[in-house]
Amino acid sequence: MRLLVVEDDPILSDGLRVGLGLSGATVDCVGTCEDADSALIAGAFSAVVLDLMLPDGSGLDVLSALRARGDRTPVVLLTARDAVADRIAGLDGGADDYIGKPFDLDELSARIRAVVRRAAGRASAALVHGGIRLDPGSFAVSVDDRPVPVSRREFMVLGALMERPSVLHAKSELEERLYGWQEEVESNAVEVHIHNLRAKIGRNAIETVRGLGYRMRGV
Image (cartoon, rainbow, N blue to C red; front, side, top):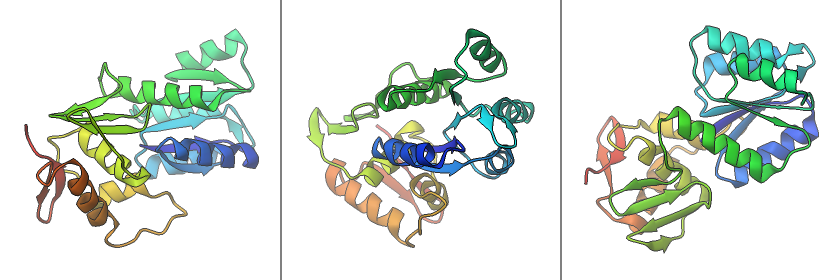
């Protein structure tokens, strides 16, 4: 998944980028309301981790503008303002979850996965297609109950395909899931990851529709 972290503390922001990245996410970070608004208008994110106290305003204003545009991107508020009234204001303002500082990174990761899962209308955390199973919580892939080792980016590509298995996913869409703003995109990266995945989960598991994209082959 691709996440936007809105946090003005550079040490915490960088820690979230690295920590959430280790759980299989691509993370972009901004530190102001203005930059958050611009990023959310321009990009497609799986979820947003949003601080409330920002240098140029309140994260609640970012949340309000997001919901006013009809954007349903899940939002997890992350803030030191953890009073009951603050939690109520955030949730009533359109947030999907709320976690106070200090926090546990594993818990934050789990809460992000939960709001993304609910937004997609899935009851189970695991993605299953035929004999292929992908578990975001344990960062594990198996085929017919046989564990299959995959790299972080192979995991991300497979996850994107399995979230909507019958939908064609363009190469550019998969690149957006794989690479943050500061990362250089290699021209054939997606093709390489698809090739490696086929070698691990089955040659016919992923279908290529030339000129349009990739999707999971029907079962």
